[in-house]
Picture 1 (tube, rainbow, N blue to C red):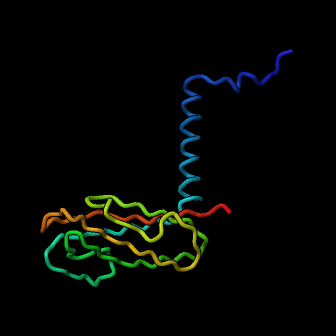
Picture 2 (cartoon, one colour; picture 1 turned 90 degrees about the vertical axis):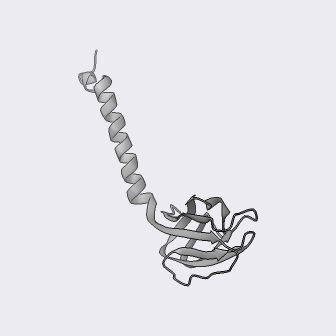
Amino acid sequence: MKPKFTHLFKLNKINLFLLIILIFLLVCLIFNLFIVQDIIVLSYSARADDTLGFNLTNLDLNFGRVYPGGIAIKTIVLDSKEKSYVKIISSGLGSENLVYSNNNFVFQGEREVNITYVMPPNTKIGEDYNGNVKFVFFRTLF
């Protein structure tokens, strides 16, 4: 004896395509609504110079003028009311020269992160380095 509703479960190419699209949209929705809590993007800049210069604004990570072979440090205070996993991602010219005191960590409340820009010793005077530092806050499952 043959079951009556087997024709409803046959997958042709169109149904398979629609099922894949539906699964993809569901995964994107779950990822965006339930996993990524917040994203903060700050721009950074540093300039190789033979004089030392400071920038005291707190809006972005402007490291100012840095000697070739020198370093500049900025401190960021992160705040989260919920327990969060934080991943720091940098992009742009000179992003490989950024060093973080903490990365890929779980916290709740306030947490300081020191971001150090290390100017390579062979950098030419007048070169500018610009990019973005992205702080991605993920919800923790446990």
